[in-house]
Image (cartoon, rainbow, N blue to C red):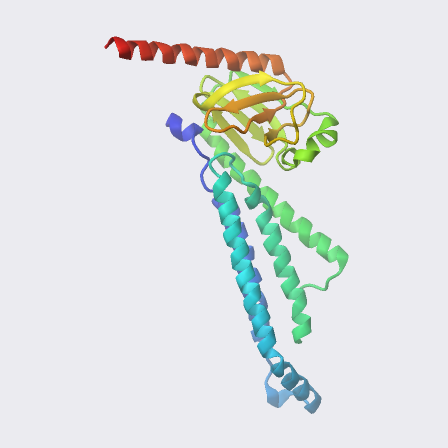
Length: 289
């Protein structure tokens, strides 16, 4: 496989995007479809039911406006989802937006189905029971995580031909919650292992991968305690074994926590030094010519 494609941007996560689109469509279409299916024949209704139906008809204008604003809000949220995902998709294989958008749109679907009772439509799907809501949320989360895992496994196929010189697991200890929780990212993107070869570094999580080619890395160094209030990207599970990776194209550092920190740093710096020497040779040859 082409080296640029292997270490290049992950591409759009179509698996997760399809899941988000499914919930967008259900939140827009299912309530309207159920309401249309529930419209009864006036000849089959009693006088009381007819009076109730006429009363609801008088309120239809307001309800139509509510439906319109729901549609505008849902479409607006989807556009925001696309913008957020697009801004991060050139780095990590699974964006924050793609992980949580299916849950958000599924909750909107639930709320809209529950609100059909106020319009005289018995959805017979949701009841508003707290246990039912819990199962709904957990079910959507499980589906999303499974799809994200499939997406990650498919992306890892890019690296199946690479022989890794360094493979070290991420260090796990209590500092994940006590120190790193304030940055939020380590809780959403906990790391699993770190790999390194002649071409670059691969950060592997449970639901994502983040390739970092050495051609884009400026420095790799160990740190004792970073400034957690600064803008940084943490793909770490411990604050006691942190490694700071500074990229050439951004000022925002990346922090990881390999168990074999010294071995990892030594290998990366040796590779970076070799790359600098090679670049200097190529430059001198060009000047001579």
